Image (cartoon, rainbow over all chains, first blue to last red; front, side, top):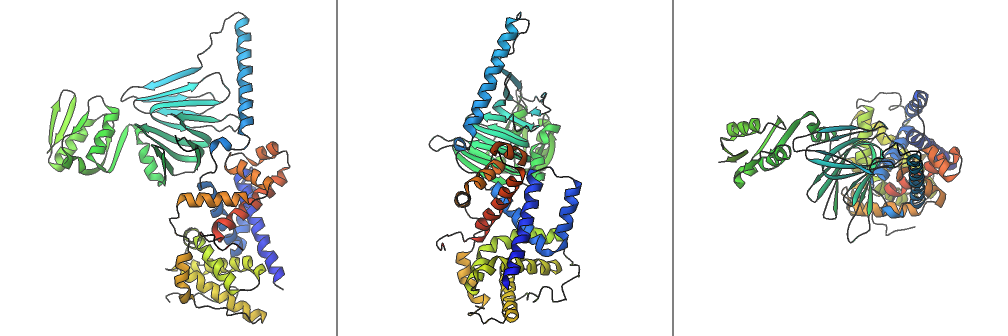
Length: 321
Length: 198
């Protein structure tokens, strides 16, 4: 008696799961979408079954992963393959040199950097795009099949053309981010490293002295911060992430930001520093948008709003009561 | 006692009537408020219904009823509403099947206390969640687990998984479908404190 309906509920769930995985892992066109929507709208049982599995999937993805990075299955073989590629590439290059030494071959790493207040856009041959913010050093491996980079300091925004056979890896000290089809932002600030994911997916391998490395799968809106071996994961609304990227337009957006934090943001972009003289002033908060290089607009604003005293000391600006 | 779930999905009054709350809104509410209560719902169903084989079916029915009712108006208290819906469904089943059940209907209110101690804390520690996922993964059949890990951890596409594992696309789809179903059951359906393993 209840067997028939039991079968029915399991059947619905199987169809829902099949749509879910097809949508996520296989090519998916308008015809698929139409069929899917028709099925979804057919019966509320269909809809709840799908919603439930979709939420489950999201939880699996958000749920961070899993075991230490080193144990990820099959990765040894992957390394072997990429090493083999390197060997082949090296042999090929020697062959080229042997043929007359016409080609000078690029160093194994290329360094790109920006000065304080500077910005730079790098376009890679594979279509990826990297934007460097102020005071940033980025190194890139050349002549290898894998795309490997090192963000030594500063901040960079990555828009990566995904290629599962050529991992795109950014190292930040001992931590690293592995692109899985993504737009992400990395910022290093002293001991703290923050990775914000805007689109797609990326794996964040977090190193730690006393514990084995951990991997976190980032999904859009995730902001992961590592400092002194502790990992904090949070979810930011996309509006907030857009604010984080306002530097790409040369704008600094303050949103109830303390003057202390605002000053240190401005100081990333300018050689003339803003100094907030006393702790009471440092606690004041304000909102607004300013050009990153215009400390004067900022100091004028706080002067008017809070009736503060602004003085110039050499290239620096001192704000006090 | 603010909301009284309508009894009888399919009894006529609900069918064919468009709700006033948008599907997207109800979907978001359902995922945010109702799904996290699944362990409580399962606990309730298991304690009040003898035939284990019916449980998954009952669960889906409860969800469908809750979803339909929420399209008319979002309930204020998701937990109370969910359990009241479950109770009504069990009553309907009993009537329909002419089975005399055990004491089907423990009062929802009297369940309150037990439920709160059982319930999934919304702020379950990430570590605990991680542990659950690990346990859940370990319970998958090996090939299924491998496909799931390649998909969700390594970020491979279905096609790439098929090549890597040397199996057909169809089999990959089967593994991924079964994997997500089982993991969802374990992540949502089982109490956070897994002291009462079957």
